[in-house]
Image 1 (cartoon, rainbow, N blue to C red):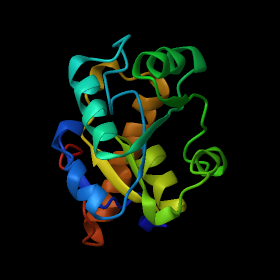
Image 2 (image 1 turned 180 degrees about the horizontal axis):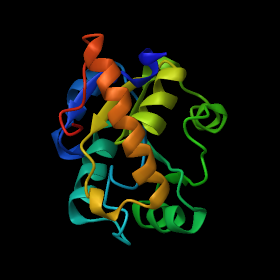
Image 3 (image 1 turned 120 degrees about the vertical axis):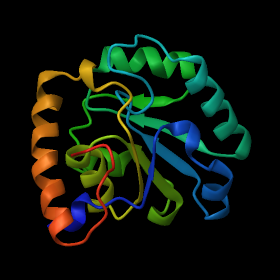
Image 4 (image 1 turned 45 degrees about the vertical axis):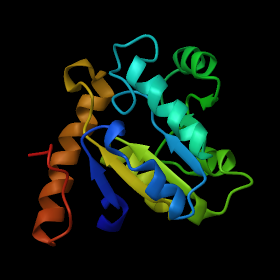
Length: 172
C-alpha cells in the first residue's frame, strides 16, 4: 500500500525540474496539478514564473495539461491564459479521468507533477507514471479538505520512514 505514496523525484518548485532531462528520458506529456503545485491556491492567474516554465516546456516539445481536483471555473481561467488543456473535478486519487487525459500517450511517456501524497502521488503511482513531487507553494492557503489530507500525509510519512522509503523533506 505504501508504494502508492512513493514519488520518483522531489523538487522545491517547478522551476527546478530539468525539462531537458525529462524529454531525454522519453517523456512527452506533462500532467500537472494546479493549486500549490503551479501557484498558491489563493492566486487567481498564472504567474510570470509559470508562464516562462510552460513556454520552455512547449519549446522543448512537451504537451502540458492541468489535472486538478479544483472547480472547473478556476481551472478554466488557467487553461485559457496558458493556452493548454486543463481539467477540474478530476477526483484524484481515482485514476479514471487522468487515464482519459493520457489518451494517445504510453505510460512511460507521461510525467505527473503535484504537491500532495494522497492525491497526486497516489494517482500517478496507481497509473504507474513517473511522479515528481513539489514542495507546496503556499500551505497557509490550503482549503479545509487539503488541510485534512496534509494531516493524513504526516501519518503516511511516519510509515514511509519506518520502511526506509523516501519521504518529502517538507513534511514533518
